[in-house]
Image 1 (cartoon, rainbow, N blue to C red):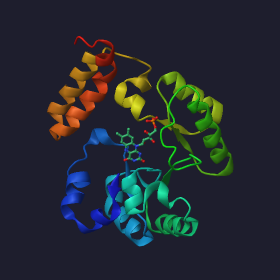
Image 2: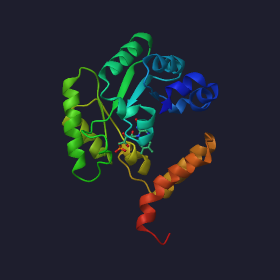
Image 3: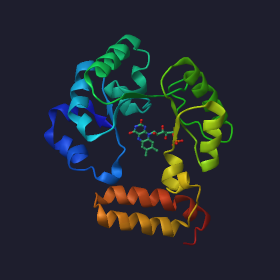
Image 4: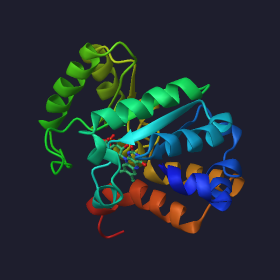
Length: 219
Ligand SMILES: Cc1cc2nc3c(=O)[nH]c(=O)nc-3n(C[C@H](O)[C@H](O)[C@H](O)COP(=O)(O)O)c2cc1C
């Protein structure tokens, strides 16, 4: 997620996060902005649209930082503002506009974990899918290729994304669970080709190893 206001005002932010930091393997690519002003969102999107396939407005972030910045899930009740934002973007941009929304009934209920939470999610998403005439992607608690297939079959959505599951097992969408060290090695090989800040590498390796090191604590 990029801050639309920062992106419009700061050439370094543009370079570091998009202009100089995208390689062919990153495509197809969706650039997500948080914004609470239609004009600023569209200004930022116009600057980004030649570097991506679609622009996403973040209406899903439930974190405190989003509350303070008045964006993400904290805009979801401002229907008039959201309508103006999306209509303006739809009119001005040459790439599709997407909205990432948060379906929880209560904003503070941000951590739906455990075996029953998936089903609850899916009923919400199904209701959204039935109510709109545009493609819907589902996300939340997708941990395996079977989850992906069930989700698409059960709901008829056009796509599924995975964040936590995919960070744990980047081969999730291939239906494989390779040994962690193999994934880590492959990841590090990619890092040599496409260098990035050490903190990113540390965070990815932490996610990859997390479960294994919980089980094999002697390691
Ligand atoms: C490390 C991390 C970073 C995330 N960053 C974003 C973000 O920038 N924008 C966004 O809309 N959601 C973001 N999310 C939320 C995920 O896209 C997703 O909606 C959420 O994790 C639930 O899906 P999951 O069960 O597949 O993880 C992030 C989640 C994680 C764990």
